Picture (tube, rainbow, N blue to C red):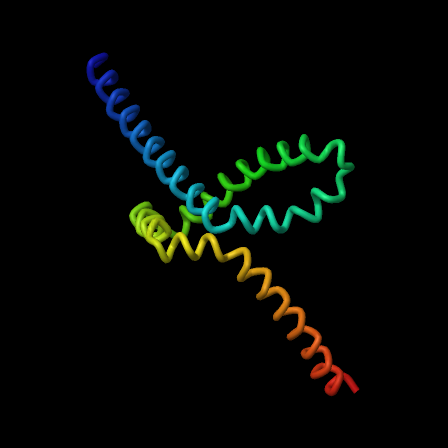
Length: 135
């Protein structure tokens, strides 16, 4: 009986370890994808926040901010786990390792900045359109 309990313990423990290892692998890949696709956007978005911190404290704040992003990325990785398989994450990462994928990562901040300007202009136009119907 003790041998059976021991064998079950080993099997269940090994299974749990395998799932945990797979989870860690998925999480690392998902975090890498988030860093590739969103890391620069988080930096751009956080710039006005950083500028509110007194200059003598900015470097320390940036360090804490960067550290806090790690926790955010881990939480976001769980969302990716709900929507993608690990194989799909592998394929997406493979794309970002191609020349066009690297270009996309490099140019996304510039594209986002230009898109925000276009969006603001559209928002002003939309206000004019809305005004016609608000009377």
